[in-house]
Image (tube, rainbow, N blue to C red; front, side, top):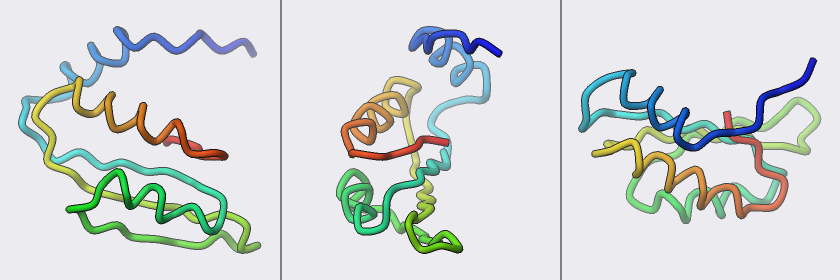
Length: 89
């Protein structure tokens, strides 16, 4: 199955249709073990929950953040995308 290319504008429209800002938004990322601190650096004022994969190679991270716009959410995802091996959920 072919995936559509990512469209920042479409994602922004979906975020704006999801609810009203400000809102509490949950970010979830999977990173290689040892890189969870890089995710934490993006969200220094927020609590992050961690869960290691069964094999120990990956760590699932969950962070809840009060955001004020769809652009702010997109900015966080763009920062996270610079981390090697990150998977954004």
